[in-house]
Image (cartoon, rainbow, N blue to C red; front, top):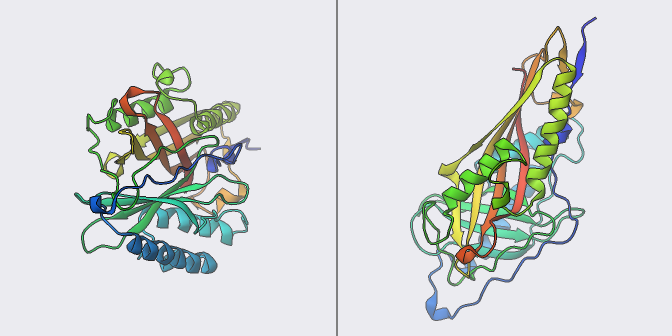
Length: 325
């Protein structure tokens, strides 16, 4: 009889950051009308947000990702498509609630493309507010929702310039903040790879995203050992899709996408076993190895003038692929 080793897929599949206490969302900082430098106007924002959610609502109702593509693009389509697959297979909680009502909207100042717009939603039931990321790739392109992440319980977003002025987008190597956005992302990825005993662990404020990632790693490593196998995960930053916006006080808010691959292998004739929900997504026939791929978004606040540690204020862990290899 062949042995089976259980994979605790659920430990990674939904690192849901539910509300322990409500995160703070400051109002955008006002500025005189004469200083308007924003890439878009409030009138345009008032068109973009409803158009986005009208498209999303239609696709959600039909559970059909092909209805997305004008105001919802990129990673958002990939993630939503997987959620539709899971929902059709019977997972009633697969489709995340993304509230249309925004507590605050932050936009880029005039400058180079791509430009971004950031929304912070009202809190969904039993969850924290969602940070939404829109992108405009060129002058003739629409702003499209491309990513999102729930706020970390207890987190506080920094004050941001209001829509009339907009926030300067910072190059990743900008020395306007210390450390630079690129250095912060690099150090945080090092921390994720090496675990809680990493030499850079003390450089960041505590956050539930990495704590849950480390906890899942421990569970899956133990599951692999039961099958005489091994577990390994890899974390890769996506710097080409990373953005940094200046805060009102001279700090930065960094939007850093990550690709996380979690691979479990068993030996000695054992067969991996995954959750029923994940079986809907499996490519290939399950044997001795399974790899889950996630596309995450981590939002990191870098305080101004080195006054405090960089802190993760929002993060989500989105499953996009399951492969029997």
